[in-house]
Image: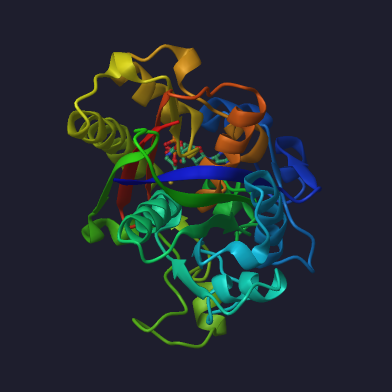
Amino acid sequence: MIRTRITGVGRYVPPRVVTNHDLKQWMDTSDEWIRERSGIVERHWVDEKTATSDLAVEASKIALEQAGKKPEDVDFIIFATLSSDYYFPGSGVLLQHKLNMPKVGAMDVRNQCSGFVYSLATANAFIRAEMYKTILVVGAEVHSKGLDISTEGRDVAVLFGDGAGAVVVEGFDDDSDRGILTTHLHSQGKYAEYLWTEAPGSAGPRHISHEILEAGKAAPKMRGRDVFKHAIVRFPEVIMEALNTIGATLDDVDLLIPHQANLRISEAVRQRLGLPPEKVYNNIERYGNTTAATIPIALSEVLEKGMLKEGDLLILAAFGSGFTWASAAIRW
Ligand code: COA
């Protein structure tokens, strides 16, 4: 049976660090409020010239090198982002061009914080269907250019950062059970308005206007408490769904990498599942929420720190705007 394995992982964040203290120059907030509510201490923001695909290029180069691949070895690109370079086309084709890759297909996935797990699941299905052998899966975001950094937008603005993570996945046909064991994808669109950027879009005026800007519709809006309440239910649910599918228990889990939305959410999920702190990886304090990029960024750190060894059971889980939520179980 063909198994999809992650053979290279890379991350890249822009050099500019914006601390909680720095945010005070634009909005009425405090380091204490942000740390206590979210665990975030600092995040990275791009400069004016840098776009989402630029961050993706850097992370992809590292992932490709680690996998021992050249851009021409890749059969397909899946690019998860909610902050693409342009309204259209998506950022996947720009990555294809910037990496001088052959004319392979490139697909953008718009599933926000669940985007990376959705993309990994899609790559796994393509590989197991023998459509492609080697796929580059990227999660990248530039949030800083779209946030409302005034006091009005502070509840959202303090939480998000820019960054990119990339993985190379390949199909192997051998006797080992190493690789992606199962993936689970869910959505509930009735909560779309709970975390969204409303305009411009086809549901309203397509062009940006003073009216849209003045109504605050072009910046992300969130019903934070509702997002929190749903997240702490959906995370454990979708993690258990993955474990039940492969006939494993929480005791079998070696490492959980949850999407980095908020340290309090990760901690609540950990406690609900009864996992020890050392089995749940968090790095939100240094990056904020980088949406589709959080999981591959975390995975690259975990590998660098030697926290995963061959045969370990790794669980990835995400929840976010849509609402969407997802999990993957991987035998490392
Ligand atoms: N700095 C200082 N004060 C702030 C602030 C900020 N950045 N943002 C909001 N506040 C204020 C509010 O205006 C409010 O003031 P008031 O009581 O005078 O009206 C007060 O802090 C409490 O706001 P509230 O929204 O009730 O706080 P909270 O305890 O619910 O925490 C979140 C807010 C956003 C941190 C929390 O709801 C959360 O973590 N939600 C999940 C968010 C998330 O993970 N999103 C991504 C999902 S992928």
